[in-house]
Length: 193
Image (cartoon, rainbow, N blue to C red; front, side, top):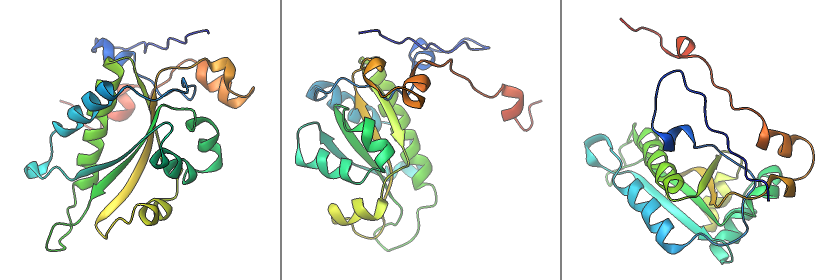
């Protein structure tokens, strides 16, 4: 197997775990170890949130389980084609309403922080995460009987890095080995004095 390394060429020093993190589509088709999943979820649990509300919830399906298969069925065909090989699929769910039915306007932001913590911990433990928006939120909501206020926001494929040669030729394989690119800082910062 040819392991792909795609360390970011940064303009300023950052932590190695951040520079080395990327989102592959080639995964080893084996379940994620329970201890690594526990650590990833623990990192998400300890991420910051507005007023310490912690408005994140997760549906975790490990390869070989009915939950994994149900999540995979809700992915768009393109994503299902590669993500079904991952060791786990995680639905990131935002709790957008409080107990009285009031909106939690920062819930999605807080969920994003939880997923960032989860993905960095997972990467530190030798796993890779690829977050996706291409799935049926309504299908997830129905399949898992989610009440109003629990909104499926993304699905993440999680697992050990696989051989990109096992991906279909063309776009998928080319993306897996292409140089990483980001906009320059000057395009991102609106004001800095």
